[in-house]
Length: 242
Image 1: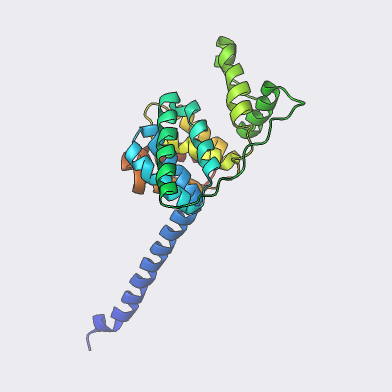
Image 2: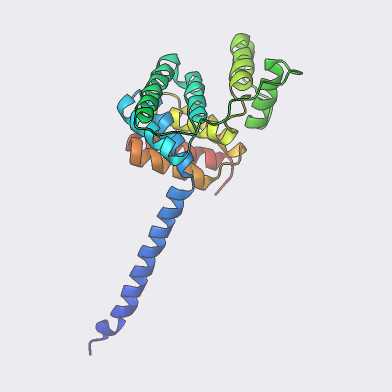
């Protein structure tokens, strides 16, 4: 018998083991985000890109995945702070059309809870400053604060106070939405890098970040995913992670 033939089963077994390991690794990567969280990625990305046809499909799928009506509303409202009112309003109008179609089909979607009132014992800026500091891990610094105090006030009082202070969407979900939107826009890598850091500060893991990028690649576009991956790599290196 040829010596090569005696080693063939071992080689085949090794190759099969490698393929299984690769498949398992890919499964872990794509499943690091829950189906609901993956839906946040597509809603946010297509809203940011203004692709309303794909957004319509993503909204329909997100309801099937378990996101509530109010959670989706909250995502679309928050996105105006990052994508602008026009894209946010277009997203909301698209969602209204999706809801109308589903109701006509007799589909009853879970409404979900409304946001609680903001704390009465704190001003919007006080609340926003606390949330901003918690999310970035330290008090905000930067030349923009003294150069344009108004934008600092708007960030603290409105973005982090009025919007992030609403408790019907958790901080991790808000950061998944923000990262996905920024990944789908050009010229905002400094902000994308900042929000990857904030995402880690909320407890999102590297596996979840990689999963987010996998969803971008499979559902949105390779260019967006490649840029997000490169930006995430810089963040991981700067944080001293492996």
